[in-house]
Image (cartoon, rainbow, N blue to C red):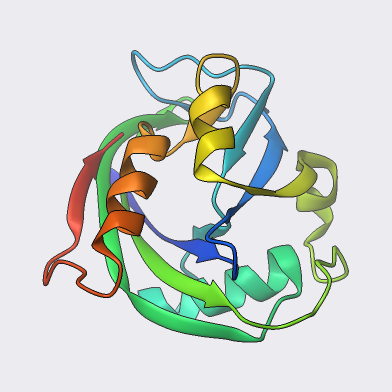
Length: 169
């Protein structure tokens, strides 16, 4: 089975809101038992390129998908492992989710998006924890259980666990 390694960013602003990106579902990735609506929300991120480590990929993906660079990087807080169908073939996904804090005044930009991403990415939005909790019933949010995961992360403050929390697709 092919393995896809990816890096995602749990980007928080000064108000403890998380940046989410709304994508149009193209049917390429199917997570068994986890239906996705036509539009879904996910943290910034994507697959590793040749020669990259997870942290390098997170930095590149954040720049590509948002244009943001004034970021204070933290540790890997979550890992995600799971088997999915990707383009009709089985793929094992292994992702690391890095905590980062946006401290700048830059505006989110679509200037660095890849051509395929321009059609798939609908919008960027900063979400408060309360907004995520309220939206969980009507929106598809990834990773699964994001409001609870974010609540735990915010409650930990500077006392983050020594090891990342394991998530499952």
